[in-house]
Length: 116
Image (cartoon, rainbow, N blue to C red; front, side, top):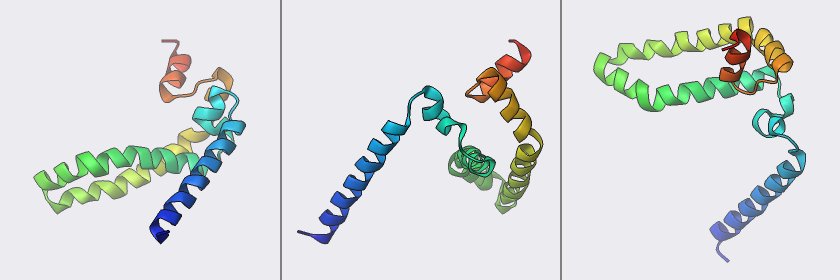
């Protein structure tokens, strides 16, 4: 057999193994969407940061850099600092709010906070 085919099959076996393990761990929608609220603040912050920045870096960033020039790259550093400040200032409050209300998304949290 070709080495590439062996590696691909091994990867597929590992992938199915991880999927079977995760399926047994998942009992509720909270387990599926929020990892059972067991992830630490650092992991959650990096996840949100990567999600938000991926849209900017792949879609908005190149267009902004094309239209404004290389100076537009200075948006990246303030964004990083802003995300860190937001998680430091709001992270614990948001966690307490979502625990108290059972919210799973930011929209759910705003809905419960402002009764709207």
